[in-house]
Length: 80
Image 1 (cartoon, rainbow, N blue to C red):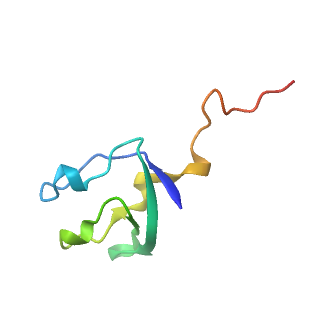
Image 2: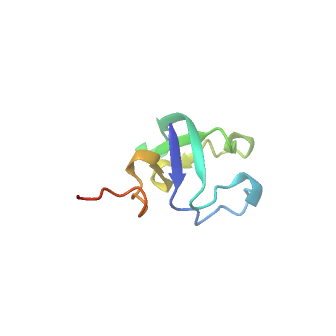
């Protein structure tokens, strides 16, 4: 599933910038699960946080599925 990052804030200091997401960038979700305290987590193909224990993925709330992102002016529905 394609998603767009809507929140790239609060990067943990022990994760390099190159492994973090960028707001408004499109990513591909490869797995989704619940982490500690039932927090929804997603893993994305373009960034592998498992190289940086204890991180397993990103909070799912940092992303929106492409189909749920607001339409651009060109994509918005126009009444005739």
